[in-house]
Length: 272
View 1: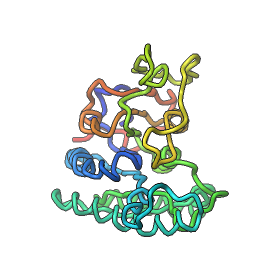
View 2 (view 1 turned 90 degrees about the vertical axis):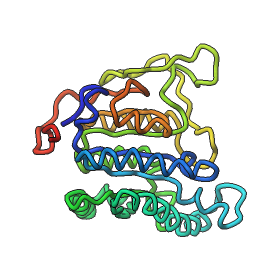
View 3 (view 1 turned 60 degrees about the vertical axis):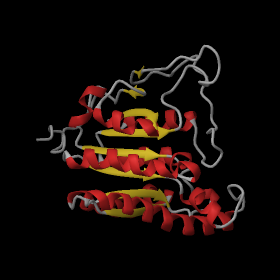
């Protein structure tokens, strides 16, 4: 079922969780373990979980002795090829503790813009979930070009949620919620709830992430939340260390109501 509020999250049947580069790379790589703990707990109660994970390029930086994210496309592609391998190994090693198998899904913008590859992607994702495999999705940075990129994985996560008819999208970052202005500024207040169609007038939303290794920020998360909400998916934005609380339905983060009309499917029934 599509949760109408945070308290109904534990009954959501199909959940997409997105985590950013800064949350699971570099000195924060140890957060993969707690993230997997939370995903495995939701998986164990019967939910179908998809993880959209940035971090391939950021993971490769120390391995390639690079001081920062490369600016040229060829080096970005090479770093992605190295980092994606290591990132998947880290996730699977952590998932092994729960006997959960991951499946790697790499997508380009063209895959979701054209009917045939979109249908193929949807069929593959549905089958992976039916087999109780946890798909880990990332942009295929090794072959993507500047002209045909998603732009950030927040948007990718929203489009994946739309593709598979997810009940809930959880967007994780290094900030615990949206605020009325950048949270380090005086007078910033948490935005707990965003009604469907609310344009957030008067809210100062920044466009750059704090860590400097990813491509997203609050602006991309709001845009992604609106894409998913329009498709009938509830959205929660919060911090990566709070993912267990988020999936348990605690009163944290910023909640976006979905569009009021949605077609009922077999998945829109509470889990046993």
